[in-house]
Image (cartoon, rainbow, N blue to C red; front, side):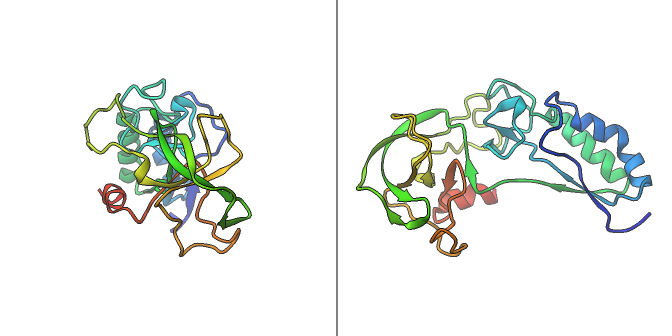
Length: 215
């Protein structure tokens, strides 16, 4: 076997029929025989788009296709047991697994919360475009389908520093910084400070946020 050959075992447009984990389970030894020593698997948790979500619109990191959330039990790639079986098959065939996990943001909140925010300039994220005012933000994550299994933490507005959707106005073209929460400073200087990328950006200065991610 050729050492160090890694395959990205997914792409954006694979069918959303929940078949990927079963496919890997069936073809693991064939992939190993072809010389692949490692596979990069897509995000396995539930995204805000449920069974259609590729996994980058992070909803619940603990739901690997086990709970009825966001309109489905399975993810785009299958259910939890199929995922674990596929990993075991790959490892038994001598293939290492790299699991893609996104810790930067969350999306698809279950309820809105009224918060104080200011509009920030998209091209210079250190420069505000408005005074502080109240917006409605989908920053409350209850995970009602999962309950407290695996983790009892529920996410609220104070877990985030920035977002781009105001439910009160249905506005998606403004960048909002939550009052008393700041951008990270040790990031790219593009756009003044390129901390914010998408959805509800996690506040890594919050010890509860860091603790949950480590857990």
